[in-house]
Length: 294
Image (cartoon, rainbow, N blue to C red):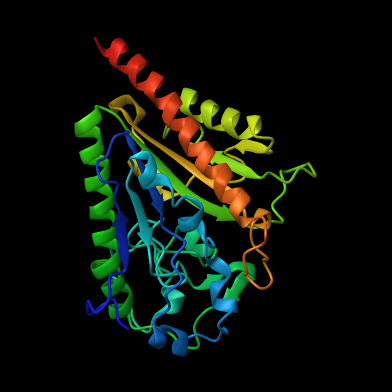
């Protein structure tokens, strides 16, 4: 298996028969197909290498096409390539020669080992046995990262052209031990809008209200406000809104074995309700936006 040589599709778009709503759903971190060469280059075992996955998030949001929205799904794992980063956030400590001058080697994410080509998975577990060729990182960016973002841009542009509005829901999961700073509260969901810059406050509040109305603990922006995707694609003044949703993994997966819990179907059903109610809200939101523009 080799995505770089084009033998396998690294991602797919699950399309509705007809797109009927101004939403695009994206699951960039739920990929769980690991190239054999990558596994052989890793010092981690088959379970350890999966610690960075947003486990089964693509399945939690699988009903998106039934509501009339496309769902973009990564098959490549986040440990292999992280598309929720700038294209060249690369750690020079990982490579056997100098990186190109345009690489961003000084970002906080690179310092933490979580660049475009990650150095670690969760719990600071080093991925690789040895340094990588720079050409390997650049090939992953060219053959996977850039096509992925080109696809996402097309979906958003198509949606905006059709509806005059596009709402990207970037779908993720978070570790079950996350707590709010200075509190024992464990949020079930976190809605991120880059502190009000990637989506309208009305959309963020609606998402929180829907989740709270279903009995979940939901908070906004802390500790996850959204990554590169939310920041890059959210332009509310242009009718381009991007929200990140983080689902607490402890709700639906055993974080030791990575097996689904019996509650998995209940959480998936709750997220289906979340999508339906957000679609209902967006119908009024879209009408309000249209009237405001007239």
